[in-house]
Image 1: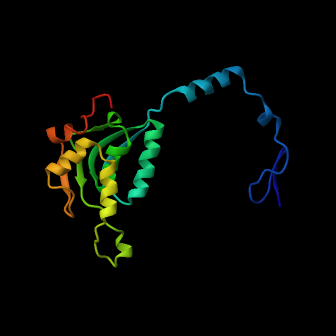
Image 2: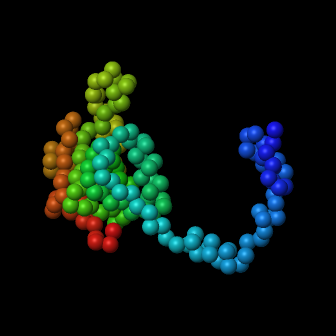
Image 3: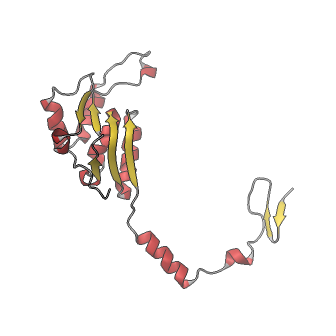
Length: 173
């Protein structure tokens, strides 16, 4: 049985059944329209705050970081950013990323989902090559200087080595 409130009626599924009341048919006032335009034109101030990210599925991270890049958002690395998390460095512009004193980055070879390898860690040369193709030259150089990508996690902690790749966060971030 539909639920009714004045001229507004809703069915059991919440679908709109009859015409909208006058309140919903009002025209947008010029001031409201101007306010809407100003809000839409304001640059986004949203940010991603990475504090403890141990990585995961590469394709999910690629999609996530592309959305962040396309919205012009900033990224603050304020803790652990390991494995697939580090793809942020190759997808979001480096001038939109900064690190705090707690930041650390961890790199290793890509491997197949253990669900498909009977729980055994099996590295993927193709996946590792794909990861490397995203990194900026500064990251590739650091990885090369430190023996390349291996099964072992190679970490960069806060300090001059990390600052050669990513700027420290300014106070206003």
